[in-house]
Amino acid sequence: MTNSQFRLIPLVAAGRAGLQSGKVAHFREDFTTDFTDNTDGWVVSPRRPDASARRPHLESVKSVKSVVRFLWLRLCCAGPFAPFGGLSSSRHPQLPGKPRQGMFRARGMAAAVFALWLGVAAARGQNNPGLPAGVELRTYTGWANCVFLNASELPVQAVIVPAAGGRIVHFSLNGTNILLENSASQGAILGARNEDLFLGGFQCDAGAGGRDLPDHWQLTEVPQRWLADASFSARVFSAPDARLGVALEKEFVLAGDTGELGLLQRLRNVSDQTVKYYLSDRTICKGGGFVLLPLNRKSRFQAGWALAREAGGKKFYDGVRPASPSVRVLGGVLVAETGGDATRLGADSDGRWIAYARGRLLFVKYYFYAPWGDYPDGGNSVEVYFDRRATELNPLSPEISLPPGDSLIFPEKWVLLPLDREVTTAEEARRLVPKIPPPPFGH
Image (cartoon, rainbow, N blue to C red; front, top):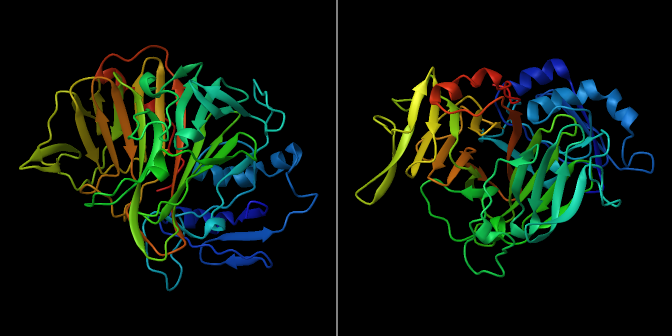
């Protein structure tokens, strides 16, 4: 599949209706003939590459910008692109005879087209002639062979560590990293320390509602294979975890012109049985900032949000009378001042974004939300944890049953916005909301 290229043509009129429907699309792979799925408005034409089709030139990328921009804005980042991977979108009408499932589900590895080739100028600091533009391979805080993605027109950088489970440990604007880095674990790998590692940064993990999963470090902490075969992008691949019967892949694409980071998290069933999981994004930031979370006007929680509590040895989310001195609801937006006592909260937010203001940075994480989804922890689509040191932002996917060979796909987009000055009060934080661009994922 890595040697195949795809030509993706959105039929805009039908495609817009499909993207806004909030339902699941199923794509199939066919290397010999074109096929059209008339129910969802997309034409996907796989073709074998030849010498003239290995990688589009910048001029050809710009010529199709109006076409692929529509796709990419719906998915992650803006910019001029040409496709080289596969995408399965949840915004399409349900196919006849297929049961409705939550989130994104694609059959087989080649069923998804996500990574889009970025045809912009070479990035700053490019020191690996054998790698694509915007990609470097360097040592970072003790980890060797880390993948650096460098924007070309803004001082934005993301650092991925394949040796530590393929996590992002650095995401910065003007050199300021918004993510927490645990200095005590820098350079650590699971093979050297036979224990769970607290590394900070971003990682994606599998979860199961109401079930405790066995250790599955293959997905999150064991060194992973990586590939950087397109400009401003990289992919990491976990080994299959025999206990859970799944493998986890993550794809990262940095828009060279805007510095926006697109993420695609794919959980693939590699077993011979149906499995049921959701995906949890754990993004650990430096503490002491303000969390902004839009609340659902039709929330299943009486208060619009819920606070994690424990009673009788059982943990639950209280959505009737949640109260915390660190949390306020201002104009339909939950504002949490972090840095205090350990607190965990959740919400069935339909806003498709969560933001974090710290120092002179506003970090916005966009994620897909499915109103029909089966979400964990009583319906939370996003959760937040904070203590005196760290602030953790946790967008969640719905929980889905995956037959053998199927994949759960959870897309996100990250943006770092500069602030004129540091936010110091909840009211100041709330006034930042109009600065947040609309989500790229449709209703």
